[in-house]
Image (cartoon, rainbow, N blue to C red; front, side):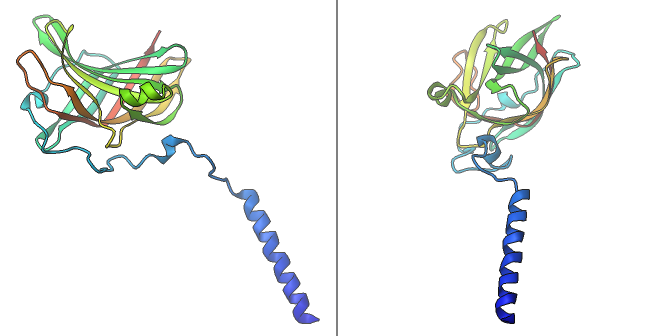
Length: 223
């Protein structure tokens, strides 16, 4: 009888251990897409083709408006080089449901500053955490997705020139690390890889691929 008793006792202990373990485990069922993103800096097949056309114009530093809310990043032209990038932030809530981000840089002109770069991240959920950035085509199919775009401007900042969309063969995201809707402030990080949709048509040739890496921002949420 003793062997049978020992066997029954052992099975009871094993079952008790399994039940206790399950009570303390947090199941990972239906994890959000944002949590399934590859780590920042991951290079996917087709990302950042260094054979694309490159222009030193995109590595010329521009200016920003003095403000307590700023954005910094590394602006990179794959295969050519990179520069520190500083810009201004504009963030607002659209349709009471999503966030719209604008990262801007300027060119001094006498006592004025003329808009030259406009990096936009649109339809970002109003929540702390990491959100994947797609391109406009993905958003058109599924409006729940966020998308990014980048444009160069000329003249008084109101003439569009080159235009880029998100390169979805790369890892693109915005991570909101702090969101204070009462005091209307937001902070976070981002990384976006861009692929040209249309070249400049006003005598300036831009790089086909441009990245904004290791981006950090702090901004007010405009009313």
